[in-house]
Image (tube, rainbow, N blue to C red; front, side, top):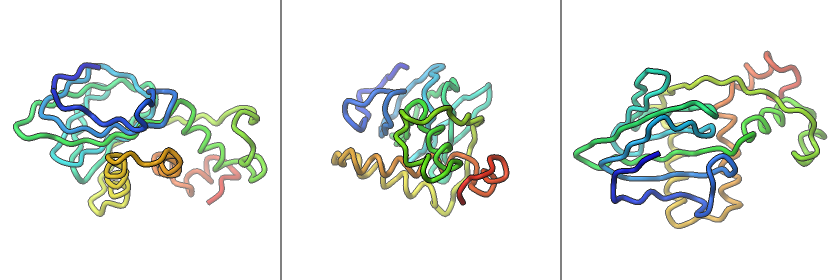
Length: 186
C-alpha cells in the first residue's frame, strides 16, 4: 500500500494492526494510491466525494450514499486524484471475527457464551465483494458516527461494542442465515 499525500489518516486504535485487530481508518486527502492490497474483511465508505475501488477487474464506485464490503483476502486497488479532498472511513475486521459472529448467531446460547478459544471448529463465511446502496443512511449513519467518535479517541471498550454490529450487517440477513444454517437466532 502506498500513500502519496501529506494528509495523515487517522487509525483507531492508535497501535492497531491489520489482520489482528478490529480497526478504523479515517482519512481525508486529494491523492491516495493503493495497489493490489489483500486486506482483512472490511467496509469502505466515503464521507465526502466519491472513490472507485477496483476489485476483480471491476470499478466499484462508492459515494456518500453507498458502501462496499470486501471479504478477507480480496485484493483491491484505488487511485484518488481529486481537486477537492475526499474523505473515507473504512472499518477493518481482525481475521476470524466475521466467522466468530456467525458462529455465535448459529450456535446455542451456552456455546455462544463460551470463550472463543474454547470453541471447536468454525463457521465458514463464503462472502463475495458487494456494493450496497444506502440512501436513507441506515448503515452509513453508524459508520459516520464511528468516524466522528474516532477523532477524539473513543475508549477501546466502546469500539468493541461498535464493531459488534458490522458482521451482522455484512453477513446474510438472519432470515437467510436461518435457512442456510439451522439454529440461527433471528
